[in-house]
Image (cartoon, rainbow, N blue to C red; front, side, top):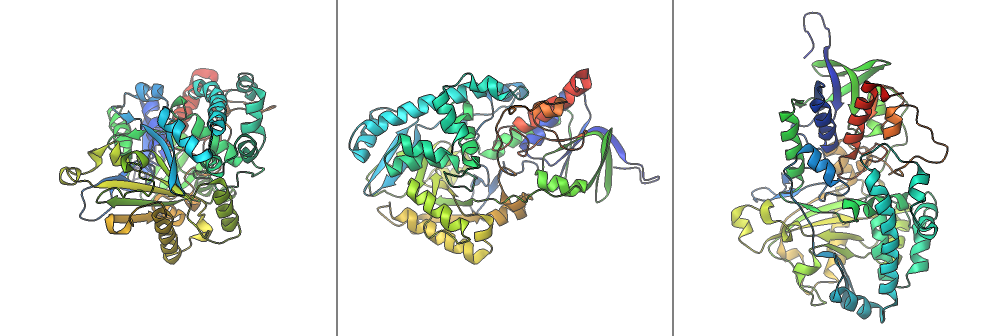
Length: 515
């Protein structure tokens, strides 16, 4: 605390605003390098969106309430930090029910995937197109993945490793153009396109290419495009980060809401109710929009989230009309209303300011892969969790509880269309999180889960970084205030990259590589 006798602020080397997973990653690297680090978190616990919570009163189940899969976090980072963390793969990549049937895509495609494509499309052409497309986009992932723990590469260094046709499809033209040219079936097109829309409100033909950037980040998950299940839930990830941070000597303070940052060329003072701390560096784990307000800078465009999250506990998995084993269908991503035509129609309605007529989104069942999040008595039953991530439900079309209730009812209708029995009698617990509710709970402006639009993970043509912060993609307009959260250049999702990059920008600067 500051000296109450003379009002002099407390001093430290680094102050980190916000206690999400990226902030903890940054704190660990800096503390291990001998820096005094203070983390300030306004909530009574750290973890941000990567937490587990007992979502249903009286029910012994700790769900990943907000973030639910580990995406782009490199194994090298996990090993560097010494995290005791188990991430499990799923045998099912996705299942997309359609009129009386369903498209099954296995994580390692085999005969079941081949037969599923054949039954849906009437031949093998669509499967061949699928294999070709993902082999080609895999070359982009292979080019980018090795750069993730280094300063930003130049675009040319990535582009030179990739065939021009697939580079054009993913980086230069709206993704919808490539999808429509390469695939003919509406359902297959939608399965490909949905990875471009998770947390991103856009048409697949959006000229800004924000959907392409979202698709790219999905491609590089785990170096292969695979997003994995954390054993113990997301709370296990941040629990491990907190453990390692405290062991490294990080001073973590919860219930400490920052209300102001006064930046100087040689540092900044971070203030809140009852505290003022001077730091040589300030790292921001909060959204750039929030940071601008704390600094007194002009506010950028306010982000707007677009997802409708529903957490469910069911007494057992429902049976599907297609007859597929529910343990296969729900183990990966189960798509609901995500044919490309349905995705585009929902986007158009939401863009016009209306809640889409039909729900479009996806479900997955954590407990088919990891039952440790259930208490012993519950785990001994057939109970399962289901997580739904609804698309094209932006902040503006879910303004209140009544609108959220309509969206939930639409979800039930959309899911029931593919079930052999209604889901509602099986539900033991339910909660939903609109963008507005996420904003209220986590102080994410607009409920945007990426803190704003994702950016390309490289330096563009003509871009010349002048210091370590710009080289690592964590700079702000203030030299000693850096981004360390999802708003960093390669932020977004559960990756730890923003924290890693901010810490290394500080360390590079301090050993004379900063300018």
